[in-house]
Amino acid sequence: MHDEACTHYDDMMNNMLQGHEFLAETFDGYTPRVGWHIDPFGHSNANPRLFAEMGMEAWFFARIDYEDKARRLDDKEMQFLWRPFSESLGDRVSILTSVMQDHYSYPAGFKYDDVNFGDEPVVSDERLGSFNGEEKAARMLEYVKHMSMHYRGNHVMIPWGDDFTYANAHLTFRNADNLIEYFNAHHDDVTLLYSTPSEYVAALKAQEIT
Image 1 (cartoon, rainbow, N blue to C red):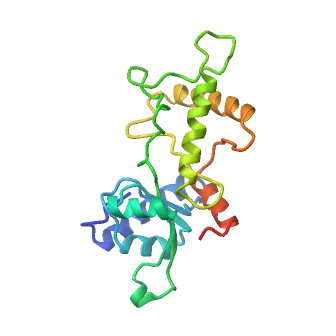
Image 2: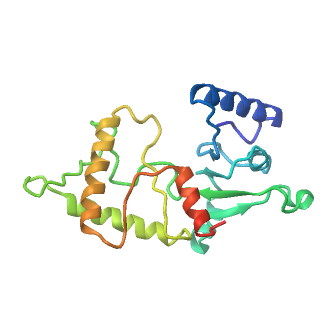
Image 3: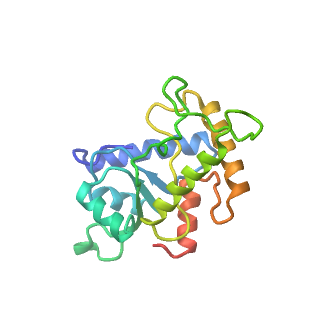
């Protein structure tokens, strides 16, 4: 991802060109359809316009003015259709946009990448004295319901990572596996699953959240 505040549009385009060429050569012609701009410090009209005209269906970002974010959380407007330069371009250019609720980090209590500073692991085996599957599942259910108050549709995207992860991906995803298995076995109203931003966008479009 590139900066959006000081970067010239030529540099943005060249950055995307190099990235697309690398992906196409490395992954047999793959072309990304979703932008992942989670860490630039602010966003400009130029970037969503370029993304839209490059054929991207949607993009995600995390950093947003705190007052704007507070209003969007209250009004369930964390997803919206951005029409950059609408004064001159009208509706010709638009892109589905989604703002991350809690930056781009694991939910609180579910960080396992760092064995020294991570949270307690998910122990889903009820035979063990350290069993905490019920507590962990309840905490995740509370988090999902909290997110559902701020997003439209019946899908929410929970980031599962952070800066400088996955140094211990095995530990991270072993805990995720335990959580998902226990959670889905004990809660019928919510389902946890692995997904991608592209699959999330497809779910939103299926529900006409555009």
